Amino acid sequence: MTQALERSGFGRGLAYAFAAYGLWGLAPLYWPLLAPASAVEILAHRMTWSLIFLAILNGVRKNWSEIVAVMRNPRSLRLLAIASVLITINWGLYIWSVVNDHVIDAAFGYFINPLINVAFGVIIFREHLRKAQWLAVAVAAVGVLFLTVDAGRLPWIGLVLGVTFSAYGMVKKKADVDAVESLTVETILLLPFSLSYLVWLAVQGDLALGHHGVWQSVWTLMAGVVTAVPLLAFGAAAVRIPYSTMGLVQYCSPTLQFLIGLVVYHEVMTHGRWIGFIIVWVALAIFSIDAVRNGRSFASSEE
Image (spheres, rainbow, N blue to C red):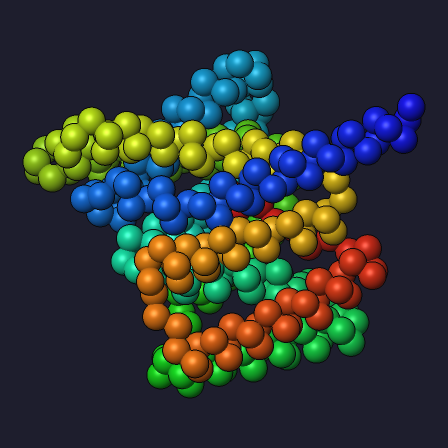
Protein backbone atom coordinates (compact mmCIF):
# COMPACT_ATOMS: atom_id res chain seq x y z
CA MET A 1 0.00 0.00 0.00
CA THR A 2 2.78 2.43 0.99
CA GLN A 3 4.78 1.60 -2.13
CA ALA A 4 1.70 2.15 -4.30
CA LEU A 5 1.15 5.55 -2.73
CA GLU A 6 4.81 6.46 -3.23
CA ARG A 7 4.60 5.44 -6.90
CA SER A 8 1.41 7.45 -7.27
CA GLY A 9 3.04 10.48 -5.65
CA PHE A 10 6.11 10.16 -7.87
CA GLY A 11 3.98 9.83 -11.00
CA ARG A 12 1.93 12.86 -10.08
CA GLY A 13 5.08 14.81 -9.24
CA LEU A 14 6.60 13.88 -12.59
CA ALA A 15 3.44 15.07 -14.35
CA TYR A 16 3.63 18.39 -12.47
CA ALA A 17 7.32 18.73 -13.41
CA PHE A 18 6.66 18.13 -17.10
CA ALA A 19 3.74 20.57 -16.92
CA ALA A 20 5.91 23.29 -15.35
CA TYR A 21 8.88 22.95 -17.66
CA GLY A 22 6.63 22.28 -20.65
CA LEU A 23 4.73 25.53 -20.09
CA TRP A 24 7.98 27.46 -19.63
CA GLY A 25 9.28 25.87 -22.81
CA LEU A 26 6.18 26.93 -24.77
CA ALA A 27 6.39 30.54 -23.55
CA PRO A 28 7.97 31.77 -26.83
CA LEU A 29 4.65 31.00 -28.50
CA TYR A 30 2.78 33.20 -26.01
CA TRP A 31 4.69 36.50 -25.73
CA PRO A 32 4.38 37.44 -29.45
CA LEU A 33 0.58 37.27 -29.02
CA LEU A 34 0.84 40.52 -27.04
CA ALA A 35 2.13 42.41 -30.11
CA PRO A 36 2.32 45.26 -30.95
CA ALA A 37 3.17 45.90 -27.29
CA SER A 38 6.89 46.50 -26.80
CA ALA A 39 9.03 44.20 -24.68
CA VAL A 40 9.07 46.77 -21.86
CA GLU A 41 5.28 47.13 -21.90
CA ILE A 42 4.90 43.34 -21.89
CA LEU A 43 7.29 43.16 -18.92
CA ALA A 44 5.24 45.79 -17.04
CA HIS A 45 2.04 43.87 -17.76
CA ARG A 46 3.65 40.63 -16.58
CA MET A 47 4.63 42.22 -13.26
CA THR A 48 1.27 43.93 -12.72
CA TRP A 49 -1.08 41.10 -13.68
CA SER A 50 1.10 38.54 -11.89
CA LEU A 51 0.57 40.45 -8.66
CA ILE A 52 -3.20 40.59 -9.21
CA PHE A 53 -3.36 36.85 -9.86
CA LEU A 54 -1.09 36.15 -6.87
CA ALA A 55 -3.24 38.39 -4.66
CA ILE A 56 -6.27 36.25 -5.52
CA LEU A 57 -4.25 33.07 -4.97
CA ASN A 58 -2.95 34.26 -1.61
CA GLY A 59 -6.49 35.18 -0.62
CA VAL A 60 -7.59 31.62 -1.34
CA ARG A 61 -4.59 30.22 0.53
CA LYS A 62 -5.20 32.67 3.40
CA ASN A 63 -1.50 33.37 3.82
CA TRP A 64 -1.34 37.17 3.71
CA SER A 65 -0.10 37.14 7.30
CA GLU A 66 2.99 35.20 6.16
CA ILE A 67 3.60 37.75 3.39
CA VAL A 68 3.31 40.64 5.86
CA ALA A 69 5.78 38.83 8.14
CA VAL A 70 8.25 38.49 5.25
CA MET A 71 7.95 42.20 4.43
CA ARG A 72 8.57 43.11 8.06
CA ASN A 73 11.75 41.03 8.13
CA PRO A 74 14.57 43.39 7.01
CA ARG A 75 16.85 40.55 5.85
CA SER A 76 14.16 38.78 3.82
CA LEU A 77 12.92 42.05 2.34
CA ARG A 78 16.44 43.10 1.36
CA LEU A 79 17.14 39.77 -0.33
CA LEU A 80 13.81 39.75 -2.18
CA ALA A 81 14.43 43.33 -3.32
CA ILE A 82 17.69 42.12 -4.89
CA ALA A 83 15.82 39.15 -6.35
CA SER A 84 13.22 41.48 -7.86
CA VAL A 85 15.94 43.43 -9.69
CA LEU A 86 17.50 40.23 -11.02
CA ILE A 87 14.20 38.77 -12.21
CA THR A 88 13.32 42.10 -13.87
CA ILE A 89 16.51 41.91 -15.93
CA ASN A 90 15.92 38.22 -16.66
CA TRP A 91 12.24 38.55 -17.60
CA GLY A 92 12.85 41.72 -19.58
CA LEU A 93 15.71 40.32 -21.64
CA TYR A 94 13.88 37.03 -22.20
CA ILE A 95 10.76 38.77 -23.50
CA TRP A 96 12.89 41.07 -25.67
CA SER A 97 14.71 38.01 -27.06
CA VAL A 98 11.47 36.26 -27.97
CA VAL A 99 9.84 39.24 -29.69
CA ASN A 100 13.07 40.10 -31.53
CA ASP A 101 13.81 36.65 -33.00
CA HIS A 102 16.46 35.51 -30.52
CA VAL A 103 14.60 32.51 -29.08
CA ILE A 104 17.53 30.14 -29.64
CA ASP A 105 19.90 32.58 -27.90
CA ALA A 106 17.50 32.61 -24.94
CA ALA A 107 17.31 28.80 -24.93
CA PHE A 108 21.10 28.69 -24.76
CA GLY A 109 20.99 30.66 -21.50
CA TYR A 110 18.72 28.10 -19.86
CA PHE A 111 20.73 25.17 -21.22
CA ILE A 112 23.88 26.46 -19.49
CA ASN A 113 22.10 27.57 -16.32
CA PRO A 114 23.04 24.45 -14.26
CA LEU A 115 26.69 24.87 -15.25
CA ILE A 116 26.63 28.55 -14.25
CA ASN A 117 25.23 27.42 -10.89
CA VAL A 118 28.28 25.18 -10.51
CA ALA A 119 30.64 28.01 -11.49
CA PHE A 120 28.99 30.31 -8.94
CA GLY A 121 29.40 27.60 -6.31
CA VAL A 122 33.16 27.58 -6.91
CA ILE A 123 33.63 31.34 -7.20
CA ILE A 124 31.30 32.53 -4.45
CA PHE A 125 30.98 29.62 -2.01
CA ARG A 126 34.43 28.06 -2.58
CA GLU A 127 32.85 24.69 -3.29
CA HIS A 128 35.05 21.83 -4.46
CA LEU A 129 34.11 20.15 -7.72
CA ARG A 130 34.51 16.56 -8.76
CA LYS A 131 36.55 15.79 -11.87
CA ALA A 132 33.42 15.24 -13.97
CA GLN A 133 32.05 18.63 -12.93
CA TRP A 134 35.32 20.37 -13.86
CA LEU A 135 35.22 18.55 -17.20
CA ALA A 136 31.62 19.64 -17.85
CA VAL A 137 32.41 23.29 -17.09
CA ALA A 138 35.55 23.17 -19.27
CA VAL A 139 33.69 21.57 -22.20
CA ALA A 140 30.90 24.17 -21.87
CA ALA A 141 33.51 26.95 -21.93
CA VAL A 142 34.83 25.53 -25.20
CA GLY A 143 31.28 25.58 -26.56
CA VAL A 144 30.82 29.24 -25.57
CA LEU A 145 34.18 30.07 -27.16
CA PHE A 146 33.14 28.31 -30.36
CA LEU A 147 29.85 30.24 -30.46
CA THR A 148 31.74 33.48 -29.85
CA VAL A 149 34.17 32.87 -32.71
CA ASP A 150 31.37 31.80 -35.05
CA ALA A 151 29.21 34.88 -34.34
CA GLY A 152 32.08 37.32 -33.91
CA ARG A 153 30.73 38.28 -30.47
CA LEU A 154 29.94 36.72 -27.11
CA PRO A 155 26.54 34.96 -26.89
CA TRP A 156 25.60 37.75 -24.50
CA ILE A 157 21.86 37.11 -24.43
CA GLY A 158 22.29 33.54 -23.23
CA LEU A 159 25.06 34.47 -20.79
CA VAL A 160 23.10 37.35 -19.22
CA LEU A 161 19.96 35.19 -18.92
CA GLY A 162 21.95 32.32 -17.41
CA VAL A 163 23.89 34.51 -14.96
CA THR A 164 20.89 36.56 -13.79
CA PHE A 165 18.78 33.45 -13.33
CA SER A 166 21.50 31.66 -11.38
CA ALA A 167 22.04 34.73 -9.20
CA TYR A 168 18.26 34.99 -8.71
CA GLY A 169 18.13 31.37 -7.59
CA MET A 170 20.97 31.87 -5.10
CA VAL A 171 19.37 34.97 -3.59
CA LYS A 172 16.01 33.19 -3.30
CA LYS A 173 17.68 30.24 -1.62
CA LYS A 174 19.24 32.56 0.96
CA ALA A 175 15.90 34.28 1.53
CA ASP A 176 14.31 30.86 2.23
CA VAL A 177 10.73 32.01 1.56
CA ASP A 178 7.88 30.01 -0.01
CA ALA A 179 7.91 30.38 -3.82
CA VAL A 180 4.44 31.94 -4.11
CA GLU A 181 4.99 34.24 -1.14
CA SER A 182 8.40 35.37 -2.40
CA LEU A 183 7.11 36.09 -5.92
CA THR A 184 4.23 38.03 -4.35
CA VAL A 185 6.64 40.21 -2.37
CA GLU A 186 8.85 40.70 -5.43
CA THR A 187 5.93 41.85 -7.58
CA ILE A 188 4.70 44.14 -4.76
CA LEU A 189 8.13 45.79 -4.76
CA LEU A 190 8.04 46.12 -8.54
CA LEU A 191 4.44 47.37 -8.77
CA PRO A 192 5.22 51.11 -8.40
CA PHE A 193 7.56 50.91 -11.39
CA SER A 194 5.42 48.68 -13.62
CA LEU A 195 2.18 50.52 -12.89
CA SER A 196 3.81 53.95 -13.33
CA TYR A 197 5.15 52.90 -16.72
CA LEU A 198 1.77 51.61 -17.87
CA VAL A 199 0.05 54.82 -16.71
CA TRP A 200 2.68 56.89 -18.52
CA LEU A 201 2.10 54.89 -21.72
CA ALA A 202 -1.66 55.42 -21.38
CA VAL A 203 -1.23 59.18 -20.90
CA GLN A 204 1.03 59.31 -23.96
CA GLY A 205 -1.52 57.33 -25.96
CA ASP A 206 0.99 54.53 -26.57
CA LEU A 207 -0.53 51.76 -24.44
CA ALA A 208 -1.21 48.70 -26.60
CA LEU A 209 -3.73 47.17 -24.17
CA GLY A 210 -7.31 47.85 -25.26
CA HIS A 211 -6.37 49.28 -28.65
CA HIS A 212 -5.56 46.23 -30.77
CA GLY A 213 -8.53 43.92 -30.60
CA VAL A 214 -10.19 41.79 -27.96
CA TRP A 215 -7.76 38.88 -28.18
CA GLN A 216 -4.68 41.03 -27.73
CA SER A 217 -6.24 42.37 -24.54
CA VAL A 218 -7.24 38.90 -23.35
CA TRP A 219 -3.73 37.53 -23.90
CA THR A 220 -2.25 40.53 -22.09
CA LEU A 221 -4.50 40.05 -19.06
CA MET A 222 -3.46 36.36 -18.99
CA ALA A 223 0.17 37.32 -18.25
CA GLY A 224 -0.32 36.75 -14.53
CA VAL A 225 -1.75 33.27 -15.03
CA VAL A 226 1.00 32.38 -17.52
CA THR A 227 3.60 33.42 -14.93
CA ALA A 228 2.08 31.81 -11.84
CA VAL A 229 0.68 28.47 -13.08
CA PRO A 230 4.06 26.92 -14.05
CA LEU A 231 5.46 28.13 -10.73
CA LEU A 232 2.68 26.36 -8.83
CA ALA A 233 3.24 23.18 -10.86
CA PHE A 234 6.96 23.40 -10.10
CA GLY A 235 6.26 23.74 -6.38
CA ALA A 236 3.92 20.74 -6.46
CA ALA A 237 6.55 18.67 -8.28
CA ALA A 238 9.41 19.67 -5.98
CA VAL A 239 7.77 18.11 -2.91
CA ARG A 240 6.96 14.83 -4.68
CA ILE A 241 10.04 13.86 -6.70
CA PRO A 242 13.83 14.03 -6.13
CA TYR A 243 15.59 17.18 -7.30
CA SER A 244 17.91 15.04 -9.40
CA THR A 245 14.83 14.00 -11.40
CA MET A 246 13.70 17.63 -11.58
CA GLY A 247 17.13 18.52 -12.88
CA LEU A 248 16.78 16.14 -15.81
CA VAL A 249 13.22 17.22 -16.61
CA GLN A 250 14.29 20.88 -16.62
CA TYR A 251 16.02 20.41 -19.98
CA CYS A 252 12.56 20.05 -21.55
CA SER A 253 12.18 23.82 -21.26
CA PRO A 254 15.20 25.04 -23.26
CA THR A 255 14.78 22.10 -25.67
CA LEU A 256 11.24 23.23 -26.50
CA GLN A 257 12.42 26.83 -26.78
CA PHE A 258 15.22 25.76 -29.12
CA LEU A 259 12.82 23.77 -31.32
CA ILE A 260 10.33 26.64 -31.44
CA GLY A 261 13.07 29.04 -32.47
CA LEU A 262 14.30 26.62 -35.13
CA VAL A 263 11.04 25.19 -36.52
CA VAL A 264 8.38 27.83 -35.82
CA TYR A 265 10.36 31.07 -36.12
CA HIS A 266 12.96 29.71 -38.58
CA GLU A 267 15.93 31.23 -36.78
CA VAL A 268 19.25 30.61 -38.50
CA MET A 269 21.61 27.89 -37.24
CA THR A 270 24.99 28.05 -38.98
CA HIS A 271 27.30 25.03 -39.01
CA GLY A 272 29.46 26.74 -36.38
CA ARG A 273 26.46 27.45 -34.20
CA TRP A 274 25.39 23.80 -34.39
CA ILE A 275 28.87 22.71 -33.35
CA GLY A 276 28.86 25.16 -30.41
CA PHE A 277 25.48 23.93 -29.20
CA ILE A 278 26.49 20.27 -29.57
CA ILE A 279 29.62 20.90 -27.48
CA VAL A 280 27.45 22.49 -24.76
CA TRP A 281 25.01 19.54 -24.91
CA VAL A 282 27.95 17.16 -24.41
CA ALA A 283 28.93 19.19 -21.34
CA LEU A 284 25.37 18.93 -20.02
CA ALA A 285 25.36 15.17 -20.60
CA ILE A 286 28.59 14.82 -18.58
CA PHE A 287 27.17 17.03 -15.83
CA SER A 288 23.79 15.26 -15.70
CA ILE A 289 25.25 11.75 -15.60
CA ASP A 290 27.59 12.79 -12.78
CA ALA A 291 24.73 14.45 -10.87
CA VAL A 292 22.51 11.36 -11.11
CA ARG A 293 25.34 9.03 -10.06
CA ASN A 294 26.11 11.16 -7.04
CA GLY A 295 22.51 11.92 -6.13
CA ARG A 296 23.06 15.66 -6.43
CA SER A 297 20.28 18.16 -7.06
CA PHE A 298 20.51 20.64 -9.88
CA ALA A 299 16.98 21.70 -10.62
CA SER A 300 15.88 25.30 -10.79
CA SER A 301 12.66 27.27 -10.94
CA GLU A 302 12.10 29.56 -13.99
CA GLU A 303 9.62 31.89 -12.47
